[in-house]
Length: 112
Length: 113
Image (cartoon, rainbow over all chains, first blue to last red; front, side, top):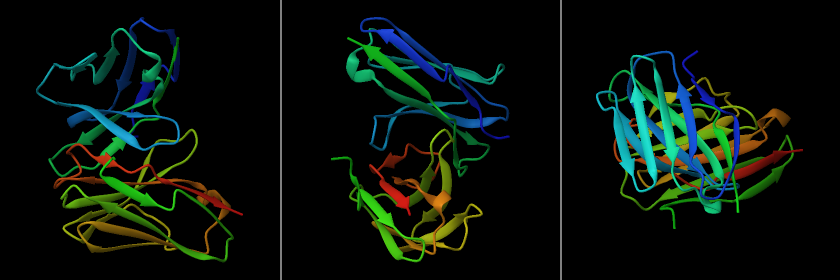
């Protein structure tokens, strides 16, 4: 299957704690993107990391990519209740015109 | 304001009805997409349009018919749907290619009776 797996499927933490979500895949990628989806809303793009990059930051978000292990992680530091959402990784397969392949997502719940 | 607007937000229809979903983007993007999101399943790409031309039809049944009259508008015409077609239908756009960050609308929640 071209689809990867997010791990864990669900994560519940307290406000202020860090949240780590992982994404694994099976085929070579062009880039990998992370998206957030609040309940009843569309997806929002968070970060894009290219296959030749190892780490990217955006505010409280940190994304790492290990192409040798075919895995990526999304770290949210100092989580807030507003971070409660589903988080998806999406991979672009070989070639710049490749379509996005989404995983099933991690449902994050941040309790105040 | 997400830049991508979908209407209607909710739609209930019988299996014999014909309806259309509308998507409009105000971002000046050249590529637009339809996705289907069902419970406990990954987001499924349905159609890809690039500069108004359909470049991908991901084995979607013919009861779903897309239309892209210009780079800003995308429609999904529905007819003779099945109960398993009940889902959230999301429209997205990107500047030129699917590998770039995509901007999503809030979707149309479709229920088939």
